[in-house]
Amino acid sequence: MAAVDTTVAPAARPAPAAGTVPFFTCEDVHAYYGESYIVQGVSFTVSEGEVVALLGRNGAGKTSTLRTIARADNPQLKKGAIRLGNHDLHKMAAYDAARVGVQLVPEDRRIIPGLSVEENLRLSQIAEPKGWEIEQIYAHFPRLAERRKQEAVTMSGGEQQMLAVARALAREIKLLLLDEPYEGLAPVIVHEIEAIVGEIKAAGITTIMVEQNAIAALHLADRAIIMDMGEIVFTGTAQEVLDDKALREEYLAV
Image (cartoon, rainbow, N blue to C red):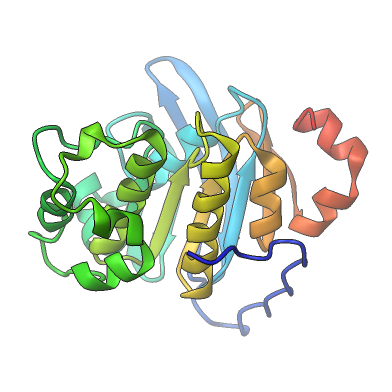
């Protein structure tokens, strides 16, 4: 797979026309793990085709925000609205959110043991509507094509991450949620995953990415949202964060 040039800052996307429904919105979202108040009044919008890096230190509430958007069992949404176009995600269960196009790639990947690479992909396509066809996925993930008959859990961590992303693309997809896609991977594999995320961006798939490797995420993102202690403390372009060393040191430790 050809490397993606991430050295040029992405161009700003035009704002939605007045009166149009935003592509994706979080509005005053509050979520809890039990009695622990994790997501504290988070509000932001994402435009169609945009890649947003959701950044912050460990424990800032980033993963909890993604899981709340995806309507995962935890954390529990106690207040606020989450909308994908005209779909009220805050009123949905996780499987309904997935059916309207919200696909979460969790940090732990959740590859199904005992199944081959291709069986993992085909299992993702049982539910309607479907996303990318299997051969289209293999065209973008040639390493998975080489290992299509291999038991998926025997692959390397980087290959399993590719499969986790590919499974999301095999479903109907309007919003891709990536949780720590570079976690635990060797630098050379990180570069391959970066290239894949770059291809997803080029395909126009709207993406929110949580990533501790903030610099790598910022080079791919159009915009950045920084969280601290469950709240949003900064929203702006990715380039603004790259250019602001004091901001990075205060909230990202980079």
